[in-house]
Structure formats: structure tokens, C-alpha cells
Length: 535
Image (cartoon, rainbow, N blue to C red):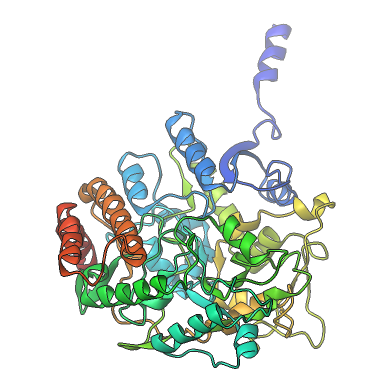
């Protein structure tokens, strides 16, 4: 009897044994180890849990494959906490996995356990709109990242030193733009006596098209970055969805771009090279060869860190949108990606759901957000000092982001980084301290901020807000195929028209392009999005 009693006593879990283990699938980079991360350890102590991470990296292909394997494996984690530019749940996936019972709606959990998330959804209606299905469910939370300079990603950065060297003004119209780029090609602005200048470059990720095309028709077209299988060829005529890339204005823009190509004003590798090759040209040790590019910031085609010895990264400044057929137009895109980075799965029982929501809610507090994203005070960030100013000078400065010390584990493994970028409001981002000197690495964010002010508010009424639309479940699979086929065709055809493989001046070739899109189901493509827009 004594032996049996002892045995039974040994089966009764004590408080420590009963501690919940929560498995989270997350993204980490570099030297980070989420399982030993000091923010993870802080949460474990604060919420009396043991967090075990299944991890993937920041590479898109790697992260998406790992996430799909995790979902298909049968042994689901209790939650997913992802980063949008590596891997996240699309809106179609959220609806599908919700219908299958794989993920659980968050509405009741937010109401009961997450007052800070509830407040955030009320304070930022656009965040709530992004997260909420037409029937009122919140199936997962997207990251809200109100990045001002990301909102207008297709800025043209021109070599203003070359403008000065040649004594020419900043262009304001398409014709002036053509003339300035011609001067860059023929006027030897780099002063080496050789006609080796490349007026405009681009890459397979950052198209030469959007900035120039906006002078002819409003567009969100891009061949790589920020396209991500989205309907970037669409626009609005009032409340009617249409293909911007099938309109007369698009053809006129192609004619102008083809004229620039024929004049040798574009880098021949613009449609094929990757960002690394583009930057290798920008960083050439033989000299400065680039006149400019359409990118979110010039660090994509010339290195900021470490800076070039001749400080060429400081030669590039943003050109305001060109004054074209409809005035000045800039492409706006919501900087927060549609879908969700945070979901809770059916593997979580009621108590685990409660704890997971409390953890996420803590990251929505000012204290938790700063600690999760920037790390420990004095290591990842510090308080402002007297005289320091915020990025938006109308705001009270909040904190100073300190440089990463890759030798100090408390620094590189002291926060969750981009995985914790859950509610970066405009005020939170723009209250960070930034130096006034924009031509330094430390002042780069202010440089991007000031450049974006040239584009702010110039978006067209034709803007198609696809990020806020939910496509019906029964249309999702068909739409995925249509999007891939149609948007890929537009990208390929655009490159062909610009480079002269097709002639945009030829009526027959233009009609063949339109007929090709019709054969791919463009009418159905528009119909599905019109239905989503009308909901």
C-alpha cells in the first residue's frame, strides 16, 4: 500500500510540472535564437509559460516552404507569428483554414483577454478594416506598419550632382525628363571623358515603369517588389474596376518608354538583373555611372553601409512626380500587407489561447512593443536627450534606436525584431529620434521621410485598394490562377513593348496584346474583383 501510494503521489503534477508549453512557429534571422532570446525568456517569466519555437528564416522561399510543411505535418503549433515579407497567411488562406477549422477566430479572445489590441483596432480604423472579414470575423492579425516612406514606394532618385555638373534643372514633365536623361547620356556628367553613363537603371524587382508611367496614367504596376501576386494592373473608373494596363493612357506611356529605350537611356539589364547586380553597378570602384532609378530608397542601387569612399550615396535626391496628362500622380500602396502574420490554431486549448492572446496583447502595449522590437534599454535603445528631435518634428521624441553590436548577444538576441512589428503607428515610427543631417547613415530615415513628402497626397482617384477587399471563397482558387497568368503576361508584354520586341505604335500589335489578355480571362479577373469591391 505504501508503494502504491508513493507511486500515485508521484503522478500528481506539481505547479512546475503543470506549466504550459506553447509552441509557436516564428521567423528569425542572423544570429538570433528565439528559444534563448531574452525577450522570450521575459515572456516565459511574466506569463508563467514555456515557449518553444519552431523557426524559419527571413528568406521568402525558405519561409513559405517551412510554413506549408508545418501546416501539412499534422502536429500543428499553437500559434504562428510571422513577418509579412518572408511568409504570412494570405486572405484566401485565412478563409480556407478557418473553414477547415485549422485556425480559430480571434474576436472573443480579443474582447476577453486583449484590451490593448481592442484599443488599437478602435484607434486605427484602417487596421481594423484590414483585419476584419466582411462578416465581421477577425481570423488573424496583420502587422500594422504605418511606414510613411513605404507608402509611396516608386520614387525616382536622380543624381543631383550630375544636374549641377551639367547646369540643368530638375525635370518637371516627361519631355524635360527625356532631355535631362539624354544630357546624362551625352554630356559626360561624371567627367571621365568617356560616354559610359547609364541614365536610368532598374531590376527585376524594381521596375523602370511606375514613376514614368504615372505621367500618362495612374498605375500600381511593378514587376517584382510589392507585387507579390497582387492585382497591381487594376484601377478604378469611378466605382468600376478596370485594367489600367489596357487603357489608351497605358499605351501612350509605353510609346514614351519605348522612345527612351531607343535613345539608349535605360540600362539594357533593367528588366533582367537582380538587385545585387544593380547595386554592383552603383558601387563600381571605377566611378559613378548611374543617373537614377525608381526605387523606394537609393540604398537599393548604391551602398549606404558601409558608405562608398567618394560618398556617392549622397548624390541622389528624389524627383517630384512628373506633371503629365492628369497632373502630378504618385502611386500609393498600403505599407501593411493584407492577410495575417499572427494566428492561433486548433492545437491550442482554451488556457493556451488565453495565454497566447495575453502575450500578443503585451506586445501591443508601449512597454512591450518597444522591448519586443528594439530590445533592452541601453542596449537596443535609449531615452532621448535634451535637444534631440523626432523624425516628425511636431512630435515629442520617444526613443533612440542604437546601432546593433553583433558581438553582444544581449543585443543581437535581445528582441524579436520584425516579428514584433505588430502595431507601428505613424506616431510610433515618426516619434523616433533622427538627426537633422539627412546625408548620413543615421539620418537616412529622415532623408526618405522628406523625399516622400514630395509625393504625399498625389495619388489618383483611380487607386484600387485591393488590400482591403476579401474575395469570396468559391472564387479564390480561380482568382489565384488568373492573377498569375494575367499579371505575368502584363509584365512580359510591357517589357517587350518598351524594348521594341513589340511596337506600341503598331495598332495590330497593341490589339494582339489586348486579345491575349482576353484569352487569359481578363473579363473574369475584373468580374471577381468587382464583386469583392462592391461588397
